[in-house]
Image (cartoon, rainbow, N blue to C red):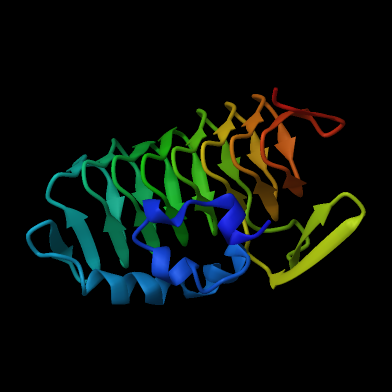
Length: 218
């Protein structure tokens, strides 16, 4: 569940920031400040600051119906589509798709990530070339509002965070209408079947069919 095992940090502007943390969820509380600091260092030849603390690459495409709150960075050649709702504290990488009616807050989205249809991503990190199918969401608050823990078999890791969605590794595919429960960590190259409810740690190279049926990819 370590940062270095889940992500290739060469595919995000947040590389230097994330390198400070052994586990990626430890980075959630400082995303806002990181984006503001990073934004001020961006090349004016590549990025426009369209509003205070909102930087959008000149090559990005943003629908006029989208809302982008501060602070936020939108990377090169990224598409922000119809009615996307970026509430703020969001770093979106290069060549990404944030699609129709997708909502996002306090998250880091690596390069080449697709969250294209009716998704919610909150207090989460999505790795390089990961993809959420239509309607797949990260649930970031427990129903009893208590702090989130991560379950790995009989082991439990306390995060002391009340808001924690999912840490999704590089090249992960999440099927349509799946729910990633608070404190979900999915290892690299894994696949989640549609209509799944995922909790805890799913090791890399796994196929998640159900909570009792998780197999290793050949």
